[in-house]
Image (cartoon, rainbow, N blue to C red; front, side):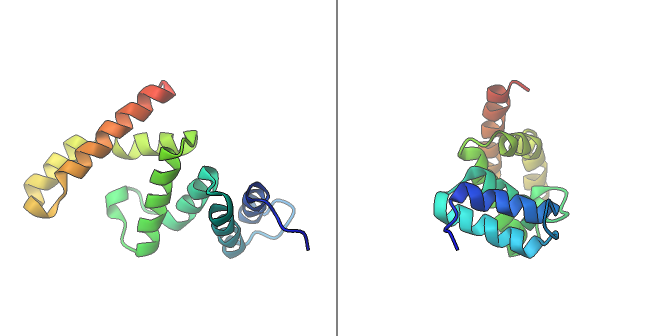
Length: 133
């Protein structure tokens, strides 16, 4: 069996995830994306895997499991690596983070990291400007 490149592994993961020419299999898709990340550190594989791991959570701070938190971290990495779709996700998640963070800080006090939330909101504004949205 020929060794696949990171890009080929990513495409294989996409096929398994969507059932394109193969039976849809999320577990195999995850394996392909993991291998692509390990082999080539592909932002698109980070994004794809991140979305799968996040599951159905509606907001980043609602993450309950380590798997979901890892999914969010992968999406953040993909955005930092230049992935346009991940940047759009980042903007949607964090553009208003400063306001929401202030409200959460008022509600939860020191247990909420307001400085980190402000940093993410600032980065989201930067991505928004880069993307022209």
